[in-house]
Image (cartoon, rainbow, N blue to C red; front, side):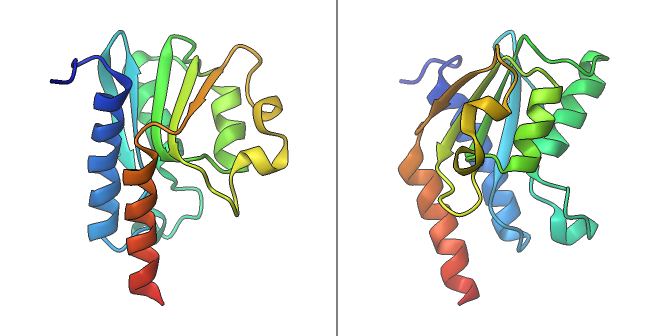
Length: 148
């Protein structure tokens, strides 16, 4: 049985968001932000729905978490996201001074690790990759198979 406060549990919650995106025809990326072992924000990609290239799951989750906490800085929070953030999202996460980022699948085409990796984040941000990596990658592959 999973502890409610495990990385696996929170990544599963991000996967729920990714599946919501998938069902809406969006690239299936989901995110949750956790503070004090409590989910304070949930989001999924909405770039098609909102006709907004910046409506990535991470950006939407950052906005929701900042509104919830009443602060633009999130040093005591962890972002769980199903896909490695892009450079835009890494920049926003740096500005938010997020305390920790946990992602599932690597993004070999647009992931921030291709463009400087950890140096793009706030110096105090801790990073962990590969949590439920196969589940996250399989959802992404299934989505793009339907597009080809």
